[in-house]
Image (cartoon, rainbow, N blue to C red; front, side):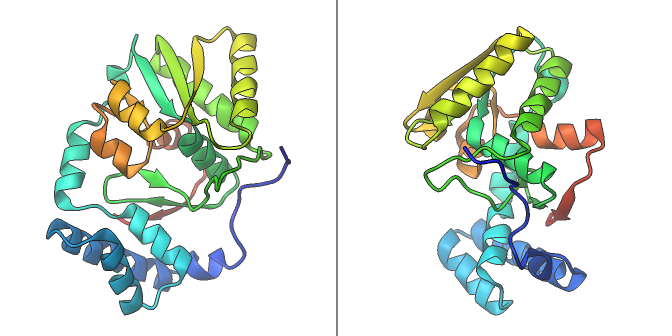
Length: 237
């Protein structure tokens, strides 16, 4: 696995770095929520809105991931737990989703806060996970959360078909053994469904998981506020 950063793409400052662009994205999220709340399809709605505001592909990806219907936002919020709810609990963590989000945050890539209060990035696995310079620090942030929440157990769930999933499993297990942490790492063929069906408490920013899991916790929000992290944040609420 190569050492590199998971930072901004070339051109991201032009797409996201000015008030003019962020204002357009906020309007796009408002329009998207209006259409989704009335039953319009997500893909068609995002294309329509993207054309209206003349947005580029990565801008469409950003506002689409940040958008949800009014009913979805309310339903997700009704299942969101506080840090005090987690004491002595077993928590399941959406491995690639959270790890890559933390790596992006630490790389000073743009992070987007959506309608549901969750944070999302523009990176992806695309079949292969590559370790970056911020991977170790990201695991340490999860450890910090584990200690402060006083969890009984943390179970990382990774996509088994993704190349290098076995390697990141080994890295996390070696870290946990060195710190005597009650962590497990599991590889699943369908991690989203596994989390929705098996996790009483899930940690993810994936919209489908948030809609289908029993309960969830906003780990990235907690770390940003608790540790006063510097974040290249664009709030699209």
